[in-house]
Length: 212
Length: 324
Image (cartoon, rainbow over all chains, first blue to last red; front, side):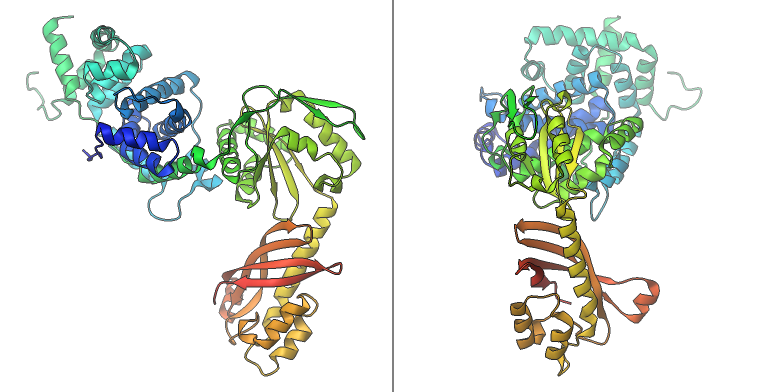
């Protein structure tokens, strides 16, 4: 797992304050949280291209709304997670096609050296294919209402505590708890085969004829 | 659900092996775009007026109703470039049939148009007031025919440009182009000076630079006759002052330094009108060897030329290029 830069709350607060006027401070926040937010969105969508698109929407929205951000003792990342969650749900609602890599390249987005964005996203696609249990889980999750998807993904993909999920989603902790409980049940019930696939992938080298 | 099974399922979810990725190219590109769009690069945003009146005169009173929260962003190239990018993104998201229909509507390829806009050094956003102001006398629109100006005025008044933002730039031929980008970020209208006086002017300047490029190989800078050769070959293209300075210091002049490679010509890649009487022309000097002539290949050396109207004639007044 990649090491993500850590920023303590005081440092973060100073950067958020400065970022409203200073691009360098905004760049520090971006550097610190791009991996977190991109990976959160990637896990929600299981689509590297859509994740890139929604990540861009998330950070542009954050930049646009930064002047509205009021420090309330919550991590800046919670605010970014909230924007990202809304953007993921918007992405599913509009289901707009994402610009293809070929189109991006033809419009001048082609890099001049090293790996191309296309290579990068194909590598991520390959990486996703290796995580069978996760893919089974996200496929099952997509059939649920977005309220459950939000809570389940923050809990099991991002390993957030109930209190943190409550902060991110702006819901009471009790509501989060019941959404989570109900979501887990729905996830199992919606696609029982998914549960099998998830469980099976926990034991990928089970020998033929070996009891389950 | 059996509570025991539920716990097992939850534990299993907790232990999911999750993908982790770092698309570095995307991260870098997005960072650059964000920093470019940072509020410190913008001026104060003020809403468009809801109604804009085109002045009476040659045209009937026309009213553009600007709907929605568009922004009057003055002339910052950063915002203009972001708007062109956004519009390009919207075009790329269109299904092929819709894209084709848009190209037909614009009578040009929307993608190429926006790419050219984004590559232009003078790309700017015009407010609706500024656009309507172009209809007054003494603007570059004087170069348009009366019919073209009337069509433009009528188009400004049409409902499909309500809420539009306007990009303006100078294209490679030195002509002003206006693109209207609607509230869905699509380029829905373009006006360029095709067939205008501007086009003739630009074509003349392009020819001047290209003809000058053809002469370069005939002036050997190390020859004792370099000064006379320059006089013979360049006098029709460059200003007297520039010619005099080159003759006094041939080492800093343009021409042939070695027998091979030699400068075969200049290819014009861009042109910008920087003042009423001045253009900046960019291009490449093509340096070739006899082998490259056979292979149809050449080394390109970027060059920038200043072309000015002196006594009613266009002349090259400055040239700078990368070292050979």
